[in-house]
Length: 187
Image (cartoon, rainbow, N blue to C red; front, top):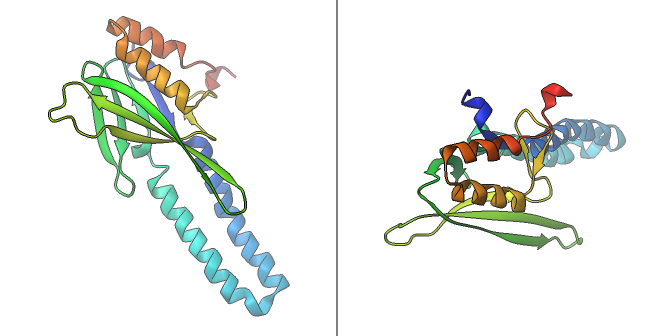
């Protein structure tokens, strides 16, 4: 079996698409604003330009290939860090407890944002250090590469836990293949 067939790649495809649409809407908003209020075009353009730069920065960091989670029969690969992604790899034999927490934040206008954080601990870490952390958007989840399937944080934790406790490489391959459903190439 080929390596690519026996892995699940969880990527932030929906977030990337939403941000890409926003990067198209911002210049259109500036053009419309300049037509409606030409005397304030510079001020509005500066603000929208700042948003555009922040969006481009976010596309380069948050939605890059470095931010994917790759699950194979042998290990889990991910990155941690806010501005600089540090690549991490933990084999299933080294992986200890897996947990997650939900962080809900509300803006003043009542808009709620939910972020899940997955914590991965290494077995026998001396001294017991802080766990590895993966930020995981609960609203958008992560999409399985080459599939239409979206896996949310709780499902991802369950998947990681199943792979961690699996007794053999063959069991892990079966778990991975069962969780890659809804192949886009067959649609």
